[in-house]
Image (cartoon, rainbow over all chains, first blue to last red; front, side, top):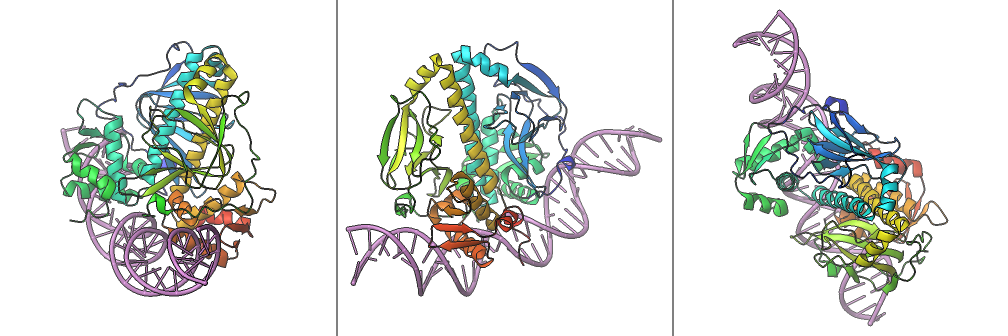
Length: 236
Length: 236
DNA sequence: CGTATCATTGAGCTTAGTCAAAAAGTGTGG
DNA sequence: CCACACTTTTTGACTAAGCTCAATGATACG
């Protein structure tokens, strides 16, 4: 598990393909309220402890939602891709921090108070908000299932498959890893070295192929799906 | 990690204190729609794959929300205590199963379609639904932070402290564990043996005291909070 | 009062964390 | 354009936390 301080993590160069906004489901009927801003790498969108005054949506690029533990360890609780909403809390303050990962990440922000008032008179909007909150629930549950897995091979395999699904580019089996090994490690709650070792392991088995460090190709999807469930007895 | 089949888990006898419904925040302005039913131990409230036709609230007792993996392993993704809502999905079907843990667990169920229509004309209700969804998000994030911890001692310590907070009976430092060791194991994503060992460890250190298997007393809260963050270097 | 399940304890083994260092990229400035 | 500095990624060796298998105690229920 990574003990690096947050400021030490900054391998977030522009991505090969600039992450098309293919999922562009912004809240309908809201052009006026949404303020879209471009963020630089590592820019804090909202931070743990400060008043939860806005909801947000990723328009383009990548974000990471995380919590820093007392001992300095960082747990990424959500990887945010285009179309993903965040900023929801049950309390008055955010209980997490969100940063832009890629250069030029586009964020739409919605003033919470105003939006809630608007939802009071626009039932369709209210439904939409609930719906995106449910999607956030779904993402979180998926991640819990990944982190709850046993072996690192299972976690990394799941991660690859999840990414392949969530950022389905033209080609189904070409995945451009949106984040660094450090981020993957903090997302899966394993050490960076273990992430690296798992990837080379999958490579040696001929399950995946790496072109550089970020471009990944799923060579044998079936095998990868086996690893996801049964990373244990995959020792042949 | 537990490989027991779900039906094999049934240590869910009536609890010493019948879990007062001290948190009784049911959806206001809804007496008519809420059908409250009593459930027996292990009774399935809603199951993975079937149409998500209702939302629910625990009125009394305890519930477990879980997912069974292909290999038979079970991951509990939410422990449900009185006042907790569940049943939210982004899709048409539930992607989890919920069972009553304690005998006589009371469940309020709300037909989803009807409730959504009602929310269309009652903005306050719409807000409430969003709010309870946000609470579900909060619980899930908390659990992710627990499962993402490194050592078993940290996980178990966190679990105890979380339970102490969530079911704050009269006395702050007396915790009645709402579930079996098996359930704790599947909630924390560790093996039953490890849960047991961690508890006896904490007992030997004088941090907690156990009266029977379910009644727990926090003797040294400060030490427990230390374990929660720093279970590693607690080897004195 | 017996039986099934839950809980605890022990021994051995495997996975992954830690520390350390080399290799591979990336970016900058001369 | 190349060289240097920096970061990220990979690999290695060692250690230990926790899983597995196995057996014994404890507890509830019929």
